[in-house]
Each structure stands twice: as structure tokens, then as C-alpha cells.
Image (cartoon, rainbow, N blue to C red; front, side):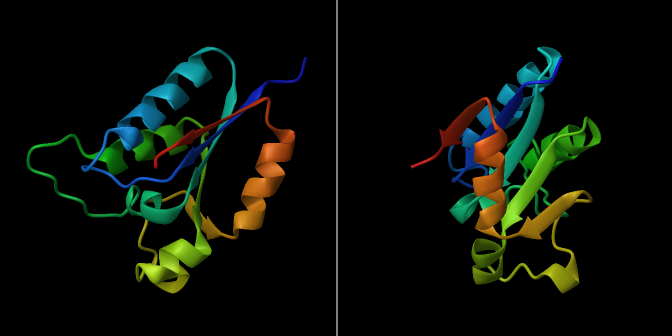
Length: 121
């Protein structure tokens, strides 16, 4: 039997809203329920997996996403959004396992997904 696929599109960055935390909790729950999970980071969501974050009063969202990647979640950050914020492929701005690719990857994911959830404004 084919595993079901959940794709989460995250449009908001960390620490201003709880969307990144909600995305990580949804992904964890989906994995426990037998889903494969993809997360596409778009707009401000591209800040979520930035390496070397050191929040003082919040849980480190990049570490949550590191655990998701280790659990097999595919995480892609939009190349146009990432480069707009100065995150370039050559400098490896993100935690290991996060790729910077085109929004066309999201279209392919959506076609293959059983469920798609968009988080953000």
C-alpha cells in the first residue's frame, strides 16, 4: 500500500507567529500516522531553517526542523524568496538537508499529495 503524502506550505517566519511551530507539530503527527511529509518554505517561511539561530525566549525552530529532516521530511525553500533575503545556495545558509529549489517543485508535490496545508497570511 502506498503511503499517503502531506505537503505543508509555510509562508510565515519564526518567532512572530506560531505557524512554524504548528507546521512542525503537524509534520510530527503526520509521520506518526504513517504519512510521508514535504514542507515547502515560501515568502518569510524561508527564515525558518536558518543555521545558527540563537533565540533567547523561544524554542529554536531550526532545531525542530533539523529533527524533521532527520525523520525523513523533505524541506525545500523557494529559491526566489531565499535569494531575496540574501540566502544563497553557495553559502549554505540552512541546516543540513534543506534544499533551495524552484516553486515548480511545490507544484509537483501538490500533484502527488493526498493533503496540502498552507500556513500563513
